[in-house]
Image 1 (tube, one colour):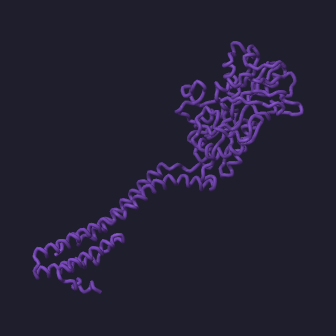
Image 2 (cartoon, helix red, strand yellow):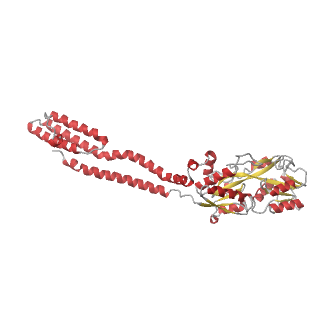
Amino acid sequence: MIAEPLLDSSAYWISRHRVLTVSIAVILVLIVSTIAVQRLRPAPPREFTLSTGAEGGAYFAYGAQYRELARRYHLTLHLNPSSGAQQNLSRLLDEQSHVDAAFVQGGMSPLPPSNLTFDGVPDDSPDSPLVSLGALYYEPLWVFYRGSQPIGRLEQLSGKHLAIGVPGSGTRVVALDLLAQSGLSERNTRFEALTTTEAAESLIAGRIDALFMIAGEDSAVVRRLLATSGLSLMSIDQALAYSRRRPYLSTVTLPQGVIDFSHNVPPRDVVMLATTANLLVRADLHPALMYVLLDAASVIHRRQSAFNTAGTFPSALHQNVPLAAEAERFYKSGKPFLLRYLPFWLATYIDRIWVVVLPLLALLVPLFSILPKVLGAPSRVRLQGWYRALGQIEHEFMAEPHADQVRRSVAALDELEGRVSKARFPADQIKDLYALRQAIDMVRERLAAPHAKAIVALRR
């Protein structure tokens, strides 16, 4: 007779093996899903805050445009007015201020001096709490002075009475830097801390000799000073050298007559220095919100001005704060693919869910290719056992080829074929099952009983 343990317990063993295999697969999927969900980026907040500038100023006006464009994404952008770039930077560095983004003038950096190179550029691995989304537009430095005699070098202002902006203002930061490079300090020159309006009034009245101010060409104060007789706008001879030493500065030209063609203002090309208005954000701001701000910047700041052609801004140039990775990708490839064609909420949802889907696919694809082989292993074991049993029957008959042994062998073959005929196998092993049944017929022929086809029930 055929050994019973293998045949009697095989069905139970296959069932238990399948349950075990499926259980392991489910456990692995749950583990990977749990890890992925724990590392899943949260959904972007529906509200965030932009620190602008004083109401009525350029920063605040631009902030209002950002707020309108954010509404296209069904987001609420709160505007937080400030005294200027210095306060904006302070707010960004203060976690209690709840400010997410701000306009900050070039040259102002949250990095400690140890993280800056000689030229004021961040080193390769600064630990900055802030990142930049890029430069938005030029902020030219205007140097007006009394008199009509051309002055082209800052050291010519030595010993004069200068208004360089109030403490904490972006104008003062840039002016002090340039004057120090030119050898001017409080030891040899008198500095006044005046607001832009106060400085303009003092210059016109003759109480100061020159003023430094950072403003756009559309500024009412700039246009008033350009129209005032007895005042001149400095064309800086060494502008290129200053910009080489301070990468946050650029050399720009105010073309002759661009302010007023009929009165030819300015009367000649004026070479000036300019910093940039930059959009800084906290490094932990959600990437989706960074792309919203970048998209708004590309719409608002792409126009032409007196100092640049259309499409110059926004730009990754002139940054002394690390550029956000999202900004680098945006300037190379534009908006992410999903944000181009899908609503904001759907694009951000898909972007988040991929964090779970990709690990699951990486696990399930090979798992499902291996699973059929694993589940089919018990069946292959059964086939091997039946082949061994068939070989044993043939071996016993060949060893004792007499009538009694033939009857015993035929009975064993009947029992074996009965078990094979009732077996249920995976589709990919059916051919192996039929090969076994052909082998049984071959042994039957060797027993000289080719017509005794197993039991009657099996021949129906």
